[in-house]
Length: 125
Image (cartoon, rainbow, N blue to C red; front, side, top):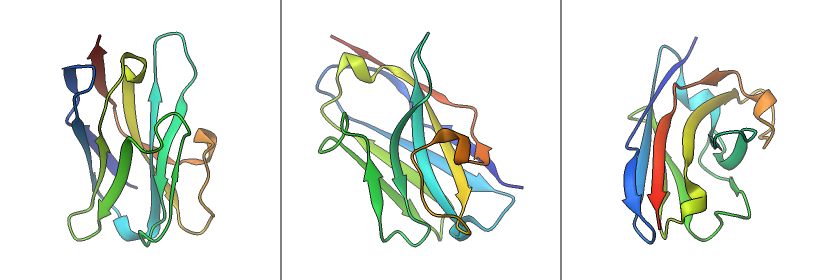
């Protein structure tokens, strides 16, 4: 059983940067693909970025490609989401998630087994 805890959210202005962190505990972090999703009020949970358990492959939503970067430090059991050039439409609760490396990476949130509690990111115009 893996526990995930996000941090780093906050209120920023358009064009600013934020780095989200997600610390994992209770399991072997390196055998999970990790991903970030977000959910705005009244919207469905949306894929943002994912990283292979090995760190060798990444996937990004088109809406964040070139602005966001996912990374992981398996020694620290932590995954990061660096968010640059933030826009008001990036405002959402951001969730960290884990999927067993037995399976391939996916952008479908139904495929993730473990979730953090979420961290709010608000971007003002």
